[in-house]
Length: 141
View (tube, rainbow, N blue to C red):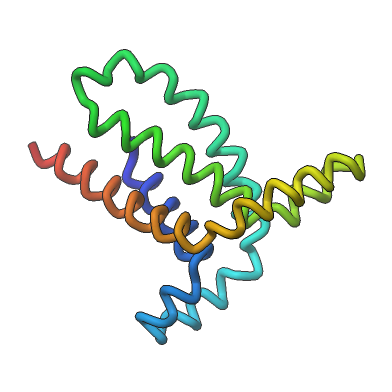
């Protein structure tokens, strides 16, 4: 678990729920607008990274009894990075798929995820901030 992972997850959450952020902080609209053109590639890279992180978390299940908060945080961050990466990068990801059947299945799965995009974005922000605090608190002790 790293501070950077938390920061990245919070960024994904902001990109996934921009309306929520802009309604609370109107001045954030300019910053989000500068990042938005790269959203597809950020999402595609994050989906790959999230998938790798999901598989890496299996190594830490043995430590669940020792540090349950840390293990749960890692699992949540991996799953959220994967889900938000897919949501944000689906346009880029679909360019690498040639089968029309596969594209239809991707669209079907994304329709289910898209309904939860705002909630996933908010969770990404919360878990990302929590990860940064968790790392800082553990470094302090």
